[in-house]
Image (cartoon, rainbow, N blue to C red):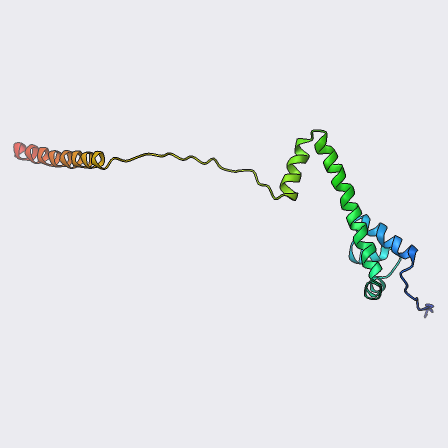
Length: 142
């Protein structure tokens, strides 16, 4: 059995109602095919409208900008009311701030050359005396 599907070509125009639907969908955070379908169009139709009318892109950009503005106002209000976690999140994500993960320890130590030479000489003498004592112990034991 074959079913007839009626086909009527649709004329695309960026009417005020259509632009408003695109704006609302973009403000809700939809993108791509979801934005087109929620706006009452097929994805192909939205792409064609983008090509023919710059007002379509403007409506989409305005919807996204208004949504971002609302979110920013909520965040700033929370920060103003003392929400430290929200302030930290804003620093991290909007300003790319990173807390230090390590502690820097700087120890400045001056080395005396004469002191170092004296210590080296003492170690050499100790090693020599240890060897001499070991030789004497061996010769006494024979």
